[in-house]
Length: 347
Ligand SMILES: C[S@@+](CC[C@H](N)C(=O)[O-])C[C@H]1O[C@@H](n2cnc3c(N)ncnc32)[C@H](O)[C@@H]1O
Image (cartoon, rainbow, N blue to C red; front, side, top):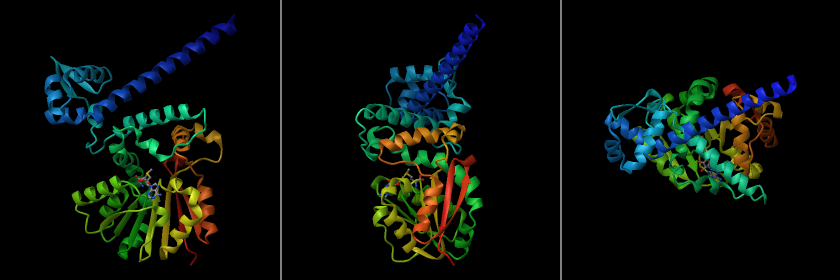
């Protein structure tokens, strides 16, 4: 009797927990609609407004906007008085142009749902269609670069940049930083704002990324120091050796060609320079995946599987450096969820 009572309680607890998680997902879904339909930004521009005014400002359908506004109110993104809506502080953080924006969280969550659904479909056959799966959601694709920037520029600025001494050394000698798989170029822009003598070269295989990277560099007045080029990492070539070659979340995309990629890295490095590989740190043991900061890695790795990739252990990357005669050092950040593996030529 006692046993069945405690079983019932624990089922109720689990059901309550699941309902709360379900509401968390609903809240992110509603935020996502407001982000990609420009509703948060439009309401910010208006300061406050009726559904009709918001629909006009955002150029969206009035009836859809009404249903969205009710749900956004229910989940705390909007306040309302006499049918006039305004953003709450939480709603304000959903604006992609907010200096401390958190828009990446709902957009990342919907991307994760998309990848989960694709994994569920593909599990039957084992097919792995590749990176094109990322581009299947037309509402998400334009946000990809900005989402990575919002997710990782904070870790870079607060933890990685202060810990990696070579940035300062290369800045003092006016050196060159190459970023392979540069996305929207945020890493080079962030570095160029901190290191005023550095020159940067970004390289990416997706032309939309290069277009955006050039555009953003121009808007921030950095176009004379940063250049961006379309090209495959596996075919990277540059006449002058670089002082730093960075690859951020890009190595796992080309890991199947690691032998030639690591030769390219070594052959393009100037004496005294360093290769900085930043990757999510796949842990040594499955137990570590339970840590809250590392849990998302497990979900990401399911999505990586769909794309034909997998996340890497920092030690595997260190060993790839050693196989081309380079030394390496592993530095962990973000409570162990992120790793920078520094490779350099023996002196
Ligand atoms: C996860 S994103 C990371 C982007 C950026 N480094 C960042 O941290 O925001 C991986 C990037 O690598 C690029 N990429 C993947 N494989 C590539 C290849 N073979 N050649 C060039 N770029 C590639 C993609 O276009 C994408 O921009």
